[in-house]
Each structure stands twice: as C-alpha cells, then as structure tokens.
Image (cartoon, rainbow, N blue to C red; front, side, top):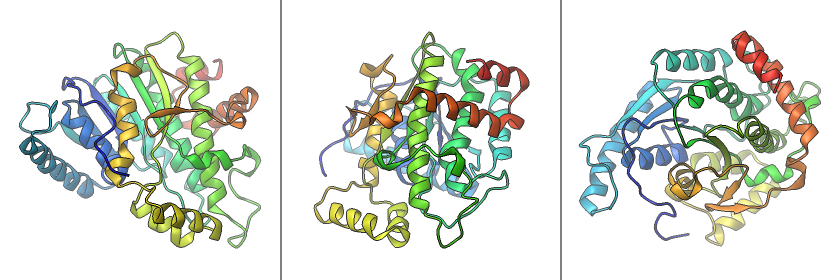
Length: 328
C-alpha cells in the first residue's frame, strides 16, 4: 500500500502534551514522531531508557530530513520536544509509579495514546496474577486511563484518548471466567484467543468511558493500524496457528500489508485531525470509521468488564477515584 500519509499535518503548540505507551519502536515510534514534528510535547512511556533515548535521537534526525525535503506544516523548532518516562505494562506497580510521577509534574494532558501491546506469548502470569496479554494490552491501559482522567478533565478542550485495537477483536470472546488461563496447560493455552479478547476489551472500554465522559471535553476512539510489517508480525507468524500464519502470508503476497510508518497513520489521524473534534465511539480502520461488530456493543458485558477491571486494579487507585468510578 503506497501513497502519502492519510492525515493532515497541522501545527500544535508545545504546551499540548501527548503520552504514548510503547512509543520507542514500531507503530508507536512513527506515531510519536509525526505528532512531535507538528509541535506537540510527546512523552514516550516505555520500559527501556536506552531505547527511548535512541528513538528520540532518531526522531530528531528524521525531523531534519523531513524539513530538508520541504514537508509542509512541520514545527519551526530546531529540536523536537520528546521525553522519556519509564513504564512497564506487565507491572501494575510500574503503571502506578508512572501515573504518580506524571501527576507530580503538574502538567496538563491533552492526548493519551494506548499503543503498547504484545501478541504471541507462552502462557505467563504477571506479578499481579493476571494473564500477560490481558494485562499488557488492556488492564494496564485501563488503570492508566482512569487514573489520568482527572488531569485530562482540567486540561481544556478537545482532549482525546486513542486505544489501539485490532481487526482480530472480531474473533474475541467475552470470557472473564478464563481471564488468567488457570485451567489451561502450556500445551492447551492459545495466545491467539487471549490477544483477540484483549483487543475486544479495548473497544468495550471505549463505549463505557464515553458514557462516563459524555458531558466532558474528552473523547475516546479505537483504531486498527492494519496488517503491519513489524517485528511483532514476524513473531506472530513464527508462533501463531496455521490458520493465522496462512492469512498473514496471503496478505503479504497480495501486497495488502503496510509499512510501519503507514501503520501509524490511522493513530496519528485520530489524534491530530481537527475534523474529529468531539467524535467518539468510533473504530477507525485506514482512518475511516468501520462498523463495530454487535458482540462488542453488549451493554451488560461492558458494565461487567468495567467493574471487574476496577476490582483488578483497586489496590493501585486512590480511594476517591475508585469510589467515583464504581458509581459511574
């Protein structure tokens, strides 16, 4: 898939603050870079300080290259405003520490991009007792999002939360009774199923959060980046089932997969496009709204997931926030 980016390049003041999880590589790197090149301050929330600083160096080099090419709309600064803050989504303690550190800065927060994720793993429980895919892809982002809502509510107009889902949500099942894979052996555990569920839960969270935020200036949308040629795809093909390996192989052969940069375009568009001000409850595929499957829209299941998620993170939430969220 070729062509130029499918998002507008629009100017942003440095005072506009964006957090992106997993922003030091892959889709997250390209998303962070383009938003920073428009002028915003971008915080890379990721595990490795060394990789983050290398990413920042690379972004600044590519920023200069884009200027030399004459790309229109880029910020007039000599250097991007990109920072690193440590975050490990496999640890709720790490998420809590990240939240506390960010709040201590007194900054506003205008955009939160929940981008970090993994897809194919062996059966693993985190230190918090959660199945790894459920926690990294969904629960840690849930904790981060609900914890930062008070900051976003006081940050002014047009604040946006962008959740990375996937087309595989369509195969996901709502199965909270199997959240930790406790009854599965290493041989029977299928990470594909847990990946699909984690991406389904992101869409269900979007609906619930938008009901809570309806009278606010915060909107929540979901995006599908497409079938992207990343290291994650390579790992996926090595470990995934024959059906999924075959599907990805066909997509690549037909030229329907995307580069990493192209894979970021839907996320960038959801963040920067002024025409999306006030837009919520939308799942974007190739920057275009796509009808969401009915099984992601079941209200009772969304409410059940919300309460279940609060229970899983309650020890990492202040009492006042926890009580408020339980009553929403």
